Length: 131
Image (cartoon, rainbow, N blue to C red; front, side, top):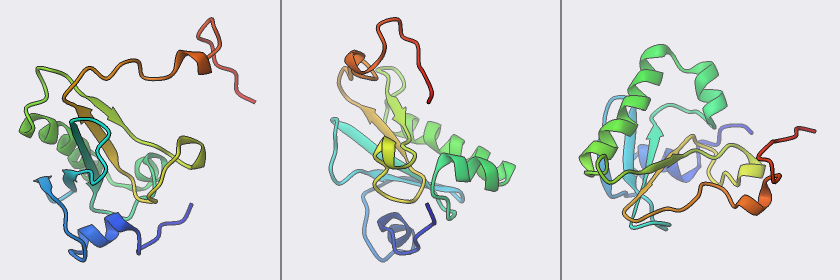
């Protein structure tokens, strides 16, 4: 998937669209999701042009990677989520239902979140097969 400079997150970074900012650094921006799936649902995005975690981990420099990861932790602390707990999630590609072609980490919190995956979609023994 190629990077699209017209994607909604690129437009937010350029100031063309508003966001409800939680945290910002030289490397990342965190803001509330407009369609929250939990009482707390925040997105953390790198300021660089990266489609996915794969793209980011292969192309971003060490300072940028560290700054982005640090921003995820700083955002969780700023929201007071550490004691109660939170979930982070990044989707990659079609099968994971990535909707915006710009790397973004979801932070979910504010209630018990339940199991990570529907157990019915996994083999009974928990093993995975790759085709």
